[in-house]
Image 1 (tube, rainbow, N blue to C red):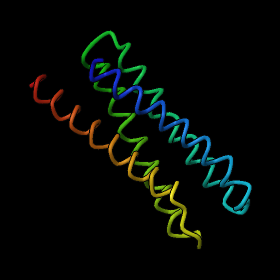
Image 2 (cartoon, helix red, strand yellow):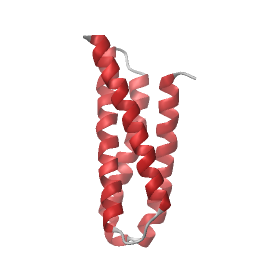
Image 3 (cartoon, rainbow, N blue to C red):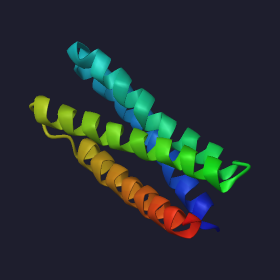
Image 4 (tube, helix red, strand yellow):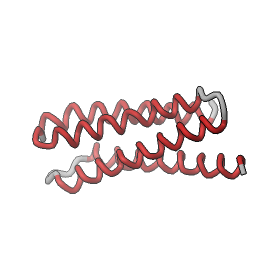
Length: 120
């Protein structure tokens, strides 16, 4: 399995986890609906941008799509941390999502650094 497909698989499973988290979370915390929607949009767009990067026609387009995915995972981490700090109960699923998001962020950042180094 190539590095691209490993990242794509991780992002797909992460998006699935975000969707499942959102469906449970929103039932318990309806007042945070807007934040949960932001989390849902950002968390699911990471994988979509990685898939677009894999199908890119050039290294420049590949880097551009991965940069967008990196921004989206950073936004996702922001929303997850905000939820963690504002909801009184601790949720192990939330902690796991933060860890998974951080792993994806590290992979994307590392890939982008390598890509920039190779393009220079």
